[in-house]
Length: 140
Image (cartoon, rainbow, N blue to C red; front, side, top):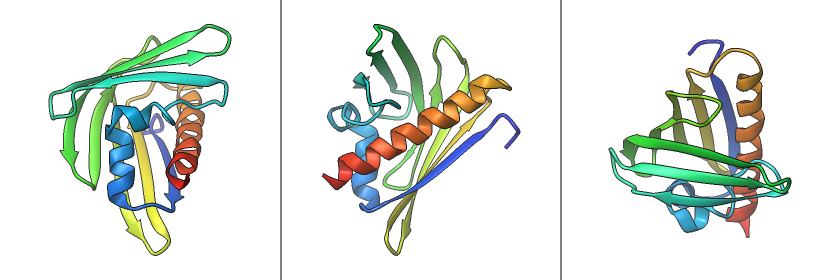
């Protein structure tokens, strides 16, 4: 890990299996995979190693943020590794792990190879917002 790695963790009252599915099923992803309340997202994926995904996040001001990548490693329900590319960052890598805890599952997102400065902090806030929304979605 370097200074340009973002690590965000959240303990969520759900099983590893439920949370793993929430990261891989486009129907569920569309309910939480955006960082701010005034956004929405369209999700498409080919869920297998070498498969791709596309997230189109729509902001209320009309801005569209497109994220694309490729699944590099899939270990249900423990770990996902995928590339993360957008207009702002290229060739970054996201690792998501799901660890059983006494009171639920700890989801850890590690986003590597980010450019220094503002993009690192923007991604920290973005992932934090997404995980907060995920906790709400799986609790309902």
